Length: 151
Image 1 (cartoon, rainbow, N blue to C red):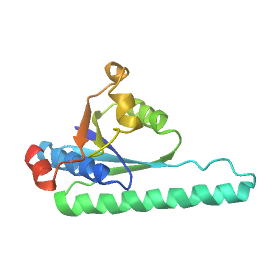
Image 2: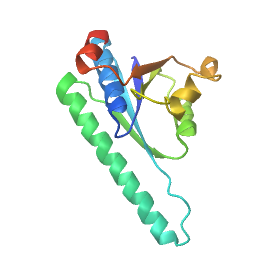
Image 3: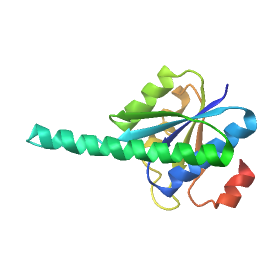
Image 4: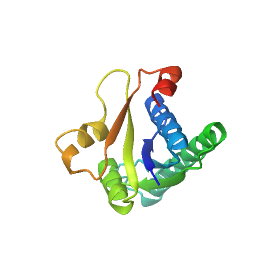
């Protein structure tokens, strides 16, 4: 089964990437795996404060993926797998690709303006030839209608 791995956050480009992957999965009989990354708190001298900050970040990430999963299931009938992980984004995505050989594509959203972001820069740069699957970069400038036409 074709699985699309989508890394999401609270940005519009991540929403577009998820929409694209969900539509492709629905049309090809595939599935979507949503990955939300938990930001690691900068070191705080009091361990309890740092633990609370990290727990709040995890809660926000879990709420984000739950809402996203419900949205794509309601709209496209695709029930995604969900993963919430802490760690350095590039390392976490590499580990996900290694742990899940059935991933057919890594789907990332690029901002409509400005730099593409560290994940796109890394996975489409000099390391692109070493990946076990293609990378799909969804432009943040696309409207939902344009995206629907392409997917």
